[in-house]
Image (cartoon, rainbow, N blue to C red; front, side, top):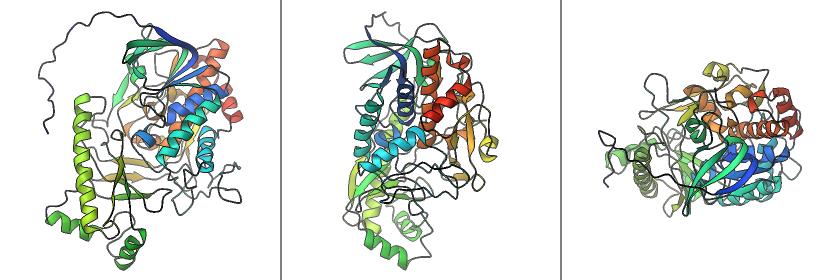
Length: 470
């Protein structure tokens, strides 16, 4: 399939000026309904702010629902043991020290709602302390959670830029089928994942790794049904030399490769359980050499990833026991994006901070996920874990774009290096930084200050009141 090529010289045209109606006004406007945006909306609303959450799709959830990024990665230290109630349907709060969960607050609240709805499996040693979930239940529970917190939700809202003076936005401009419209706000949280509003408001940002600017690859995840778990388990039991954790099937991969049936884009095939016994979530596609903020790059990535998905699925059906009758139930609405912009904040989190389990006086979140860098140029993944029983902290300064007022960033676009980003990009940390950003925005509005001028102890106190671990 032909794909458009970037022109050698960019032609520009002058667009006519347009008027845009003001659709609404609020205290705190959250852009993006993914993990960080949901955390921000709940945090701001729980802190008493009139809050609006906007999302470009017709549902909330971000990468977990739009891109089927399943399961929720662990938010426990390496020797963590989640505390459950007697019927094992709800996670309980506890004293948090070495070996315990390091994220609670909005994250714990939402996961418990998922468990109560039967849409997730609680973390345990069997799941690797991850949380497999059903994406459709996730969508429904996400809307209910944000609504119950008291935030308003606007779907199909594509944010195109900030409103107001450079470096001091007063709202956000959106594009809809009827044309542009505006939502005004006293404080804004950019939970877009790509730092879209912060970058267009004048914030500096970095892209990719130091030296060549290349980002981690994109991955299209997909769900398969009619998986015969027993037949697959028999194969694994009978071929222990070929099955090394999640890095197995190598004899079958080699056979398929030699027969011309498979071209592996990465070094492993990752299978994840879901709450449904005959279903699997598959993470195997990999598209390198593109940036998701470039429409040509992401178009190529979507096309290539779906080609890879069909080839991988055909391989599983033809070669792998347990997959004879399997089929693709669903692929992500869009490809999963690991990395784009990282907004330059008042502090830049580093790999040394992550792996050294750094603690900060202005900490607003904890995290324990390892440095996890998928090779930007091909096969290979670098995985570096924190010391056993340890976690690192994310300082409030990482949420404050340098030189920009009235706006905070949350989620994977907060201030950090390429290496640190590979750890804090995951869902639990994104929810935690989002909740902190929402709380700070609400306190700024309440006291008539900018987020940068809000004393961090006030933010930390409100986060503790909301059940966060600080």
